[in-house]
Amino acid sequence: MPPNPPPTAGRPQTVRTIVLTVLATMVILFILVVSVVWYSNNGTLSYGVSQNRSTLSYGGESALDSGVTAKMSAPSMGTTVASPEIAPSPLPPIFDGGGATIKDRAMVDAKIIRTGSLNLRVDDAAKRLEEAKTLAKQFNGFVASSNLVDNGGVKTGYITVRVPSDKYDSLVAECKKLAVLVLSESSDAEDVTAQFVDLEARLKSAKAEEAQYLDILKQAKTVEDTLKVTTALNEVRSRIEQMQGQLRYLTDRTDYSTLNISLTEETKIQAPTKTWKPLETLRQAVQGLIISLQGLVDFLIGLFIYGLGFLLPLLILLYLVYRLVKWTIKKLFRKR
Image (cartoon, rainbow, N blue to C red; front, side, top):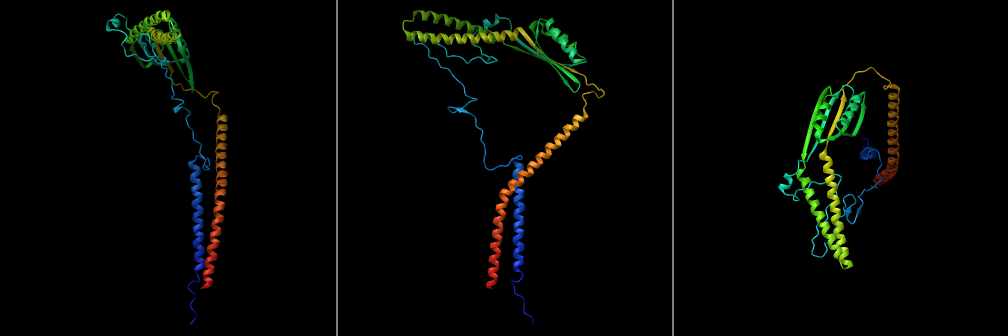
């Protein structure tokens, strides 16, 4: 009988196939991981270095949120000084009352802040915009801002008009006559009578307080007393200037009403004009294609360098492992 073949005759070929399959699988997985990392970083290779953006802070507070609070002591001369108020902002804060009585408020005419808007459809935006400016002067008002926009051949004019409050309704009526169609209209009125009267009462009280400090200052005997009174006097004058500024703001807002007007032309169907430039469109398309191709090439170059830097050492290591495994298997078979 012919001798049976050794049971391990086909093992080297099988082991080699398994090792090569495992190596090929690892290489493919590594390439996939590199591609995923690349796209997750928006095309920018990450090398483990991150840059943190922090908000500058001073003394534990953010530079954007830090504020300065001034504290002033009242003079120890039998007079109580109110704490300083916050400096006025571009839009003065609304007071909650307390400076005037109900009787005081009833004696003052109503203070109303009126604002409104008109959205008009017109035949010629540029022409109607000029007419709106003329109307503003006609009603003893003025133009706060104006603008004309051309959007694909359809022009829209924007204008903000300030007029005396008693002329507001007449202005609105005349502006409607400029339109082919009134698309929308809105009006808002805010009663600030109480706020206005309270400010006047507080201002009067602050001026009386200022007069008292001036009298005390004349009687001061020591340098320390003089400095204390001067500090309190500066504080009172600061509050007086603040309240005067708020009164000027309210007076301007109540004496002059605000009307925002938009004048939009009807959509026009016109033949192609000089603004249509197909060659310019073609150049822009070619430029966009070139930019896209540059981005693709940059991605491939980055992927190659990134993969080469990490894949080559890994392949060398895997090859050495493969050679070691192969040598070990041959040595084991030779012993048998």
